[in-house]
Figure 1 (cartoon, rainbow, N blue to C red):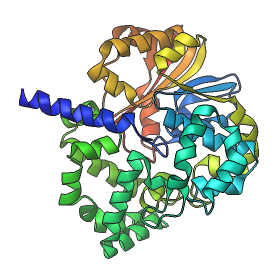
Figure 2 (cartoon, rainbow, N blue to C red; figure 1 turned 180 degrees about the horizontal axis):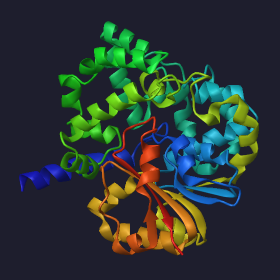
Figure 3 (cartoon, helix red, strand yellow; figure 1 turned 90 degrees about the vertical axis):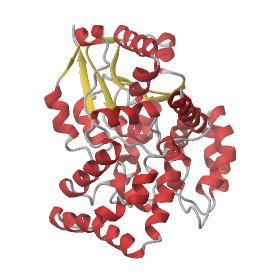
Length: 389
Protein backbone atom coordinates (compact mmCIF):
# COMPACT_ATOMS: atom_id res chain seq x y z
CA UNK A 1 0.00 0.00 0.00
CA UNK A 2 2.84 2.38 0.91
CA UNK A 3 4.70 1.41 -2.28
CA UNK A 4 1.59 2.05 -4.36
CA UNK A 5 1.21 5.50 -2.83
CA UNK A 6 4.88 6.23 -3.46
CA UNK A 7 4.59 5.16 -7.09
CA UNK A 8 1.49 7.29 -7.52
CA UNK A 9 3.36 10.31 -6.14
CA UNK A 10 6.27 9.70 -8.53
CA UNK A 11 3.91 9.45 -11.49
CA UNK A 12 2.12 12.63 -10.39
CA UNK A 13 5.45 14.46 -10.22
CA UNK A 14 6.46 13.24 -13.68
CA UNK A 15 3.11 14.28 -15.14
CA UNK A 16 3.22 17.67 -13.44
CA UNK A 17 6.70 18.42 -14.76
CA UNK A 18 6.03 17.13 -18.28
CA UNK A 19 2.60 18.65 -18.61
CA UNK A 20 3.75 22.20 -17.95
CA UNK A 21 7.19 22.60 -19.49
CA UNK A 22 9.40 22.38 -22.52
CA UNK A 23 11.14 19.06 -21.88
CA UNK A 24 13.76 18.57 -24.57
CA UNK A 25 15.82 21.49 -25.84
CA UNK A 26 17.80 19.18 -28.12
CA UNK A 27 17.32 15.68 -29.53
CA UNK A 28 19.02 12.82 -27.69
CA UNK A 29 18.94 10.34 -30.57
CA UNK A 30 21.81 10.15 -33.05
CA UNK A 31 20.45 11.05 -36.53
CA UNK A 32 23.56 9.68 -38.22
CA UNK A 33 22.59 6.20 -37.01
CA UNK A 34 18.91 6.84 -37.72
CA UNK A 35 19.51 7.82 -41.34
CA UNK A 36 21.69 4.76 -41.91
CA UNK A 37 18.86 2.55 -40.64
CA UNK A 38 15.96 4.39 -42.25
CA UNK A 39 17.41 4.86 -45.75
CA UNK A 40 15.18 7.84 -46.50
CA UNK A 41 14.70 8.82 -50.14
CA UNK A 42 12.64 11.29 -52.18
CA UNK A 43 9.56 9.05 -52.06
CA UNK A 44 9.61 8.77 -48.25
CA UNK A 45 6.77 10.06 -46.10
CA UNK A 46 7.71 10.05 -42.42
CA UNK A 47 5.72 10.21 -39.21
CA UNK A 48 7.87 10.95 -36.18
CA UNK A 49 7.75 12.28 -32.65
CA UNK A 50 8.95 15.88 -32.69
CA UNK A 51 11.11 16.06 -29.56
CA UNK A 52 13.29 19.16 -30.16
CA UNK A 53 13.01 19.03 -33.94
CA UNK A 54 16.75 18.72 -34.63
CA UNK A 55 16.44 15.28 -36.16
CA UNK A 56 13.48 16.18 -38.37
CA UNK A 57 15.71 18.80 -39.97
CA UNK A 58 18.52 16.25 -40.25
CA UNK A 59 16.22 13.76 -41.99
CA UNK A 60 15.13 16.56 -44.34
CA UNK A 61 18.63 16.55 -45.83
CA UNK A 62 17.66 13.28 -47.54
CA UNK A 63 14.88 15.24 -49.28
CA UNK A 64 11.84 13.08 -48.42
CA UNK A 65 8.40 13.92 -49.78
CA UNK A 66 7.01 14.80 -46.33
CA UNK A 67 7.87 14.75 -42.63
CA UNK A 68 5.01 14.84 -40.12
CA UNK A 69 6.23 15.76 -36.63
CA UNK A 70 3.81 14.71 -33.92
CA UNK A 71 4.02 15.61 -30.23
CA UNK A 72 1.47 15.88 -27.43
CA UNK A 73 3.48 18.81 -26.02
CA UNK A 74 2.86 21.94 -28.09
CA UNK A 75 6.04 23.46 -26.66
CA UNK A 76 8.15 20.91 -28.52
CA UNK A 77 6.38 21.76 -31.77
CA UNK A 78 6.85 25.45 -31.02
CA UNK A 79 10.59 24.85 -30.75
CA UNK A 80 10.72 23.21 -34.17
CA UNK A 81 8.61 25.98 -35.70
CA UNK A 82 11.06 28.58 -34.38
CA UNK A 83 13.98 26.72 -35.93
CA UNK A 84 12.15 26.53 -39.26
CA UNK A 85 11.54 30.29 -39.18
CA UNK A 86 15.26 31.06 -39.51
CA UNK A 87 15.34 29.30 -42.86
CA UNK A 88 12.31 31.25 -44.01
CA UNK A 89 14.09 34.57 -43.34
CA UNK A 90 17.43 33.32 -44.74
CA UNK A 91 19.38 34.03 -41.53
CA UNK A 92 22.04 31.42 -40.79
CA UNK A 93 24.10 33.66 -38.50
CA UNK A 94 21.03 34.40 -36.38
CA UNK A 95 20.10 30.70 -36.33
CA UNK A 96 23.54 29.83 -35.01
CA UNK A 97 23.42 32.51 -32.33
CA UNK A 98 20.09 31.24 -31.05
CA UNK A 99 20.69 27.51 -31.34
CA UNK A 100 24.45 27.16 -31.72
CA UNK A 101 25.55 29.51 -28.95
CA UNK A 102 22.25 29.22 -27.10
CA UNK A 103 21.86 32.98 -26.66
CA UNK A 104 21.39 36.25 -28.53
CA UNK A 105 22.21 39.86 -27.66
CA UNK A 106 18.76 41.13 -28.68
CA UNK A 107 16.45 38.12 -28.84
CA UNK A 108 13.17 40.05 -28.49
CA UNK A 109 14.06 42.47 -31.29
CA UNK A 110 15.13 39.66 -33.61
CA UNK A 111 12.05 37.64 -32.76
CA UNK A 112 9.49 40.42 -33.09
CA UNK A 113 11.09 42.07 -36.12
CA UNK A 114 11.86 39.00 -38.23
CA UNK A 115 10.68 35.67 -36.83
CA UNK A 116 7.27 36.01 -35.22
CA UNK A 117 5.24 36.48 -38.40
CA UNK A 118 6.53 33.16 -39.73
CA UNK A 119 5.22 31.16 -36.76
CA UNK A 120 1.78 29.55 -36.36
CA UNK A 121 -0.44 31.03 -33.64
CA UNK A 122 0.34 28.42 -30.99
CA UNK A 123 4.08 28.97 -31.40
CA UNK A 124 3.69 32.74 -31.28
CA UNK A 125 1.86 32.49 -27.95
CA UNK A 126 4.64 30.34 -26.52
CA UNK A 127 7.61 32.38 -27.75
CA UNK A 128 6.01 35.74 -26.93
CA UNK A 129 6.63 34.80 -23.30
CA UNK A 130 9.74 32.63 -23.56
CA UNK A 131 12.13 34.09 -26.13
CA UNK A 132 13.75 36.57 -23.72
CA UNK A 133 14.07 34.23 -20.69
CA UNK A 134 15.47 31.41 -22.82
CA UNK A 135 17.82 33.31 -25.12
CA UNK A 136 18.57 36.59 -23.32
CA UNK A 137 21.77 37.35 -21.43
CA UNK A 138 21.70 35.64 -18.04
CA UNK A 139 24.91 35.00 -16.16
CA UNK A 140 23.32 32.29 -14.01
CA UNK A 141 21.94 30.30 -16.93
CA UNK A 142 23.91 31.62 -19.91
CA UNK A 143 22.37 29.34 -22.53
CA UNK A 144 19.02 28.18 -23.87
CA UNK A 145 20.38 24.66 -23.37
CA UNK A 146 20.22 25.14 -19.62
CA UNK A 147 16.44 25.65 -19.80
CA UNK A 148 13.60 23.19 -20.18
CA UNK A 149 13.48 20.32 -17.74
CA UNK A 150 16.35 18.33 -19.30
CA UNK A 151 18.34 21.56 -19.58
CA UNK A 152 17.78 22.33 -15.91
CA UNK A 153 19.54 19.11 -14.96
CA UNK A 154 22.37 19.89 -17.41
CA UNK A 155 22.76 23.29 -15.75
CA UNK A 156 22.83 21.78 -12.26
CA UNK A 157 25.35 19.15 -13.36
CA UNK A 158 27.53 21.80 -14.99
CA UNK A 159 27.35 23.93 -11.84
CA UNK A 160 28.40 20.92 -9.78
CA UNK A 161 31.44 20.43 -12.03
CA UNK A 162 32.44 24.09 -12.05
CA UNK A 163 32.51 24.10 -8.27
CA UNK A 164 35.24 21.47 -8.57
CA UNK A 165 37.76 23.31 -10.72
CA UNK A 166 40.17 20.44 -11.23
CA UNK A 167 37.31 18.17 -12.32
CA UNK A 168 36.02 20.78 -14.76
CA UNK A 169 39.51 21.27 -16.20
CA UNK A 170 39.95 17.52 -16.65
CA UNK A 171 36.57 17.23 -18.36
CA UNK A 172 37.59 19.91 -20.86
CA UNK A 173 40.79 17.98 -21.53
CA UNK A 174 38.64 14.93 -22.23
CA UNK A 175 36.35 16.81 -24.60
CA UNK A 176 39.32 18.08 -26.60
CA UNK A 177 41.28 14.83 -26.64
CA UNK A 178 42.65 14.14 -30.16
CA UNK A 179 42.74 10.33 -29.83
CA UNK A 180 40.82 7.52 -28.14
CA UNK A 181 43.91 6.69 -26.12
CA UNK A 182 44.03 10.18 -24.63
CA UNK A 183 40.25 10.18 -24.12
CA UNK A 184 40.56 6.98 -22.13
CA UNK A 185 43.39 8.44 -20.06
CA UNK A 186 41.31 11.45 -19.03
CA UNK A 187 38.14 9.44 -18.50
CA UNK A 188 39.92 7.09 -16.12
CA UNK A 189 40.90 10.14 -14.07
CA UNK A 190 37.44 11.67 -13.85
CA UNK A 191 35.11 8.65 -13.87
CA UNK A 192 34.74 8.22 -10.11
CA UNK A 193 34.43 11.97 -9.61
CA UNK A 194 31.66 12.32 -12.18
CA UNK A 195 29.69 9.38 -10.83
CA UNK A 196 30.44 9.95 -7.17
CA UNK A 197 28.17 9.48 -4.18
CA UNK A 198 26.26 12.72 -4.75
CA UNK A 199 25.48 11.96 -8.40
CA UNK A 200 24.52 8.39 -7.53
CA UNK A 201 22.15 9.72 -4.88
CA UNK A 202 20.72 12.32 -7.28
CA UNK A 203 20.07 9.74 -9.98
CA UNK A 204 17.91 7.75 -7.57
CA UNK A 205 15.61 10.69 -6.89
CA UNK A 206 12.26 10.83 -8.71
CA UNK A 207 12.60 14.55 -9.43
CA UNK A 208 15.94 13.98 -11.20
CA UNK A 209 14.51 11.27 -13.42
CA UNK A 210 11.49 13.45 -14.15
CA UNK A 211 13.71 16.36 -15.19
CA UNK A 212 15.56 14.05 -17.54
CA UNK A 213 12.30 12.90 -19.08
CA UNK A 214 12.53 9.38 -17.66
CA UNK A 215 9.19 8.07 -16.36
CA UNK A 216 9.11 5.61 -13.46
CA UNK A 217 8.10 2.81 -15.82
CA UNK A 218 11.26 3.29 -17.88
CA UNK A 219 13.63 3.47 -14.92
CA UNK A 220 11.90 0.34 -13.58
CA UNK A 221 12.67 -1.45 -16.86
CA UNK A 222 16.36 -0.65 -16.48
CA UNK A 223 16.43 -1.58 -12.79
CA UNK A 224 14.86 -4.96 -13.51
CA UNK A 225 16.75 -5.89 -16.67
CA UNK A 226 20.21 -4.35 -16.32
CA UNK A 227 22.60 -5.93 -13.82
CA UNK A 228 23.44 -3.18 -11.37
CA UNK A 229 20.37 -1.11 -12.21
CA UNK A 230 20.21 2.51 -13.40
CA UNK A 231 23.51 3.59 -11.85
CA UNK A 232 25.45 0.74 -13.40
CA UNK A 233 23.77 1.37 -16.75
CA UNK A 234 24.87 5.02 -16.63
CA UNK A 235 28.41 4.05 -15.64
CA UNK A 236 28.73 1.50 -18.45
CA UNK A 237 27.16 3.82 -21.02
CA UNK A 238 29.44 6.75 -20.20
CA UNK A 239 32.53 4.57 -20.20
CA UNK A 240 31.66 3.25 -23.64
CA UNK A 241 30.90 6.70 -25.07
CA UNK A 242 34.03 8.33 -23.70
CA UNK A 243 36.53 5.52 -24.34
CA UNK A 244 35.27 3.74 -27.49
CA UNK A 245 33.93 6.54 -29.73
CA UNK A 246 35.67 9.78 -30.80
CA UNK A 247 34.49 12.65 -28.63
CA UNK A 248 35.65 15.62 -30.69
CA UNK A 249 32.67 15.39 -33.06
CA UNK A 250 30.23 14.22 -30.40
CA UNK A 251 28.07 17.31 -30.30
CA UNK A 252 25.60 15.71 -27.87
CA UNK A 253 27.99 15.57 -24.93
CA UNK A 254 29.91 18.67 -25.93
CA UNK A 255 26.61 20.54 -25.69
CA UNK A 256 25.48 18.89 -22.48
CA UNK A 257 28.62 19.90 -20.64
CA UNK A 258 29.36 23.30 -22.21
CA UNK A 259 25.86 24.51 -23.04
CA UNK A 260 26.77 25.42 -26.62
CA UNK A 261 27.94 24.06 -29.93
CA UNK A 262 30.84 25.15 -32.10
CA UNK A 263 30.67 25.55 -35.91
CA UNK A 264 32.82 22.43 -36.18
CA UNK A 265 30.87 20.35 -33.66
CA UNK A 266 27.13 20.79 -34.06
CA UNK A 267 24.05 19.16 -35.60
CA UNK A 268 23.75 19.28 -39.38
CA UNK A 269 20.89 21.77 -39.29
CA UNK A 270 23.26 24.39 -37.85
CA UNK A 271 26.02 23.89 -40.40
CA UNK A 272 26.43 26.55 -43.06
CA UNK A 273 26.88 24.01 -45.86
CA UNK A 274 23.38 22.60 -45.28
CA UNK A 275 21.52 25.87 -44.89
CA UNK A 276 20.50 26.39 -48.53
CA UNK A 277 19.19 22.82 -48.79
CA UNK A 278 17.11 23.19 -45.63
CA UNK A 279 15.69 26.52 -46.81
CA UNK A 280 13.77 24.46 -49.35
CA UNK A 281 13.30 21.21 -47.47
CA UNK A 282 11.92 22.69 -44.23
CA UNK A 283 8.70 23.42 -46.09
CA UNK A 284 8.01 19.68 -46.14
CA UNK A 285 8.04 19.49 -42.32
CA UNK A 286 4.64 19.87 -40.67
CA UNK A 287 3.93 19.86 -36.93
CA UNK A 288 0.89 18.27 -35.27
CA UNK A 289 0.06 18.59 -31.58
CA UNK A 290 -1.60 15.27 -30.84
CA UNK A 291 -0.79 11.60 -30.26
CA UNK A 292 0.56 9.24 -32.92
CA UNK A 293 -2.73 7.31 -32.83
CA UNK A 294 -4.92 10.37 -33.25
CA UNK A 295 -2.71 11.71 -36.02
CA UNK A 296 -3.12 8.46 -37.95
CA UNK A 297 -6.89 8.51 -37.45
CA UNK A 298 -7.03 12.06 -38.77
CA UNK A 299 -4.47 11.60 -41.55
CA UNK A 300 -4.71 8.08 -42.96
CA UNK A 301 -2.06 7.25 -45.55
CA UNK A 302 0.54 4.65 -46.50
CA UNK A 303 3.57 6.09 -44.73
CA UNK A 304 7.09 4.85 -45.40
CA UNK A 305 8.69 5.51 -42.00
CA UNK A 306 7.74 5.85 -38.34
CA UNK A 307 10.18 7.19 -35.73
CA UNK A 308 8.74 6.53 -32.27
CA UNK A 309 11.66 7.36 -29.94
CA UNK A 310 11.13 5.59 -26.59
CA UNK A 311 7.57 6.53 -25.70
CA UNK A 312 6.32 2.95 -26.00
CA UNK A 313 8.22 2.10 -22.81
CA UNK A 314 5.65 4.25 -21.02
CA UNK A 315 2.70 2.86 -22.96
CA UNK A 316 3.75 -0.74 -22.29
CA UNK A 317 3.81 -0.13 -18.54
CA UNK A 318 0.83 2.18 -18.22
CA UNK A 319 -1.63 1.74 -21.08
CA UNK A 320 -1.42 -1.55 -23.00
CA UNK A 321 -4.68 -0.92 -24.92
CA UNK A 322 -3.22 2.38 -26.18
CA UNK A 323 -0.01 0.58 -27.14
CA UNK A 324 -1.96 -2.01 -29.12
CA UNK A 325 -4.12 0.65 -30.76
CA UNK A 326 -1.04 2.60 -31.81
CA UNK A 327 0.54 -0.47 -33.39
CA UNK A 328 -2.71 -1.37 -35.12
CA UNK A 329 -2.96 2.11 -36.63
CA UNK A 330 0.71 2.12 -37.62
CA UNK A 331 0.29 -1.13 -39.53
CA UNK A 332 -2.94 0.03 -41.16
CA UNK A 333 -1.11 3.16 -42.33
CA UNK A 334 2.01 1.37 -43.57
CA UNK A 335 3.01 -0.33 -46.79
CA UNK A 336 5.29 -3.29 -47.50
CA UNK A 337 8.79 -2.10 -46.68
CA UNK A 338 7.75 0.60 -44.21
CA UNK A 339 10.43 1.03 -41.54
CA UNK A 340 9.59 1.57 -37.87
CA UNK A 341 12.37 2.90 -35.64
CA UNK A 342 12.10 2.95 -31.85
CA UNK A 343 14.32 2.95 -28.81
CA UNK A 344 13.98 1.61 -25.28
CA UNK A 345 15.58 1.99 -21.90
CA UNK A 346 15.46 -1.81 -21.71
CA UNK A 347 18.23 -3.97 -23.14
CA UNK A 348 15.53 -6.06 -24.82
CA UNK A 349 11.90 -5.25 -25.60
CA UNK A 350 9.31 -7.90 -24.79
CA UNK A 351 6.16 -5.81 -25.13
CA UNK A 352 5.54 -6.05 -28.88
CA UNK A 353 2.02 -7.42 -29.43
CA UNK A 354 1.88 -10.80 -31.20
CA UNK A 355 0.23 -9.30 -34.28
CA UNK A 356 3.22 -6.94 -34.61
CA UNK A 357 5.74 -9.77 -34.41
CA UNK A 358 3.86 -11.58 -37.18
CA UNK A 359 3.80 -8.56 -39.47
CA UNK A 360 7.10 -6.78 -38.74
CA UNK A 361 10.61 -8.15 -39.18
CA UNK A 362 13.17 -6.82 -36.69
CA UNK A 363 16.77 -7.41 -37.86
CA UNK A 364 18.83 -7.35 -34.65
CA UNK A 365 22.19 -7.56 -36.40
CA UNK A 366 21.67 -4.38 -38.42
CA UNK A 367 20.41 -2.33 -35.49
CA UNK A 368 23.04 -3.60 -33.06
CA UNK A 369 25.82 -2.51 -35.42
CA UNK A 370 24.41 1.02 -35.55
CA UNK A 371 23.65 1.05 -31.82
CA UNK A 372 27.36 0.54 -31.14
CA UNK A 373 28.10 3.71 -33.13
CA UNK A 374 25.45 5.80 -31.37
CA UNK A 375 27.12 8.91 -29.92
CA UNK A 376 24.43 9.45 -27.28
CA UNK A 377 24.57 6.11 -25.49
CA UNK A 378 21.60 6.60 -23.18
CA UNK A 379 19.32 3.87 -24.54
CA UNK A 380 19.45 0.18 -23.77
CA UNK A 381 18.33 -0.94 -27.23
CA UNK A 382 17.29 0.21 -30.69
CA UNK A 383 14.80 -1.53 -32.99
CA UNK A 384 14.21 -0.94 -36.68
CA UNK A 385 11.40 -3.11 -37.99
CA UNK A 386 10.37 -3.61 -41.61
CA UNK A 387 6.71 -4.22 -42.44
CA UNK A 388 6.26 -7.40 -44.46
CA UNK A 389 3.88 -7.84 -47.38
